[in-house]
Length: 499
Image (cartoon, rainbow, N blue to C red; front, side):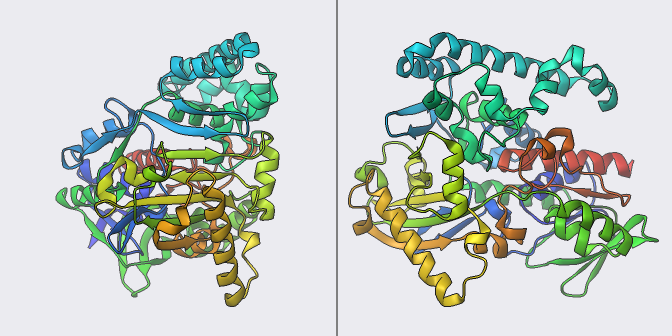
């Protein structure tokens, strides 16, 4: 049987692409190597506790927001119960501790009350921020061809040009002088995987808006409920979804146009177009059957920097974390105001000083834990090199050692935490590499440097006709929101190609 489209991988990007194409009436085959949808963002359970494997918070999920609108138009939100969130996170530094609000005025007010000497500079920063987003919205919604938009950008969208060649630190330095305030304003860096001194300014500003400006929501029962609803809607539209099925080869016609895929079971499925939500490196350098194209991509991709990985501890507690002092669903904790230091702590494996993220999903949705109990996720960014060459014995010992350190560090905020642990699972960069089939356990695809962001990011169209990419490795980047967009964009390209 020949399909209109085959999608490799039921991660966020693959699901969004499959949903878009199937709702347009295309015959889609979605193939996923895991038994569940969601990829890195899936959900798992242990002894009655339900854990989000990676998702902390997904922006633009409230009514009229970008992702929610897509879900509404696809007809699946009637199957989902959303829990609206009031604010983003509790931001904790040695001298400052406050809650970051989704409402701009409230957030600005908190910053001014903590840094009264910077009141005028704070206003200047947010005026520049607003100006950037007005220009970005005009650029994004313009129907002019991309080439023409770029040509007129120096006059029509000057801030897009300036931020595309600047780092986040360079942008912030223009407006804010206090080093501690700079650190707090750029605290969101850890959701992108690069410190402000290396992070693309344009990507920083887009992520900053998503988490500090737009209210969002959580999915009751965990994000797996959303992913399962997407799978069911794809099936209802006449398409197919197969789990526990890996794609090992993409076959082309004369090396120029996609023809079919071959699975690990030896099955071959044909389609007019193929969208890969698998990592771009494996897709373009291993799966393709065209040696010349694989070698060309191999040279190009080898020069690109991969993002960081992560170390995560999933805890099932005998009491709600809130009773121990978890007075917000997210704690963002830093020991240093210099984010280059914080980044280097993670990269060098300094687990006594690296930044931590604590997330209490069960505080948002108590049904994620047995009655009267709770969950907690402890997370930090990490470097695959810190774990690469360990023997199995060394690996297991280091997992326990790092987990014990993080639990002890967390007890500064949640006294007695270790006494209430009933369930513990640990994920390292090696887990990320194995489970997500992600080179070096990269959780955000390619790093969001200036040279790898915006129009410089790996394109979704490839050198093989009919082959497109979705997911964190391509436009617009890593994170659940960006992966949703990548899937929608890939679906639009595939639909256009099919016409």
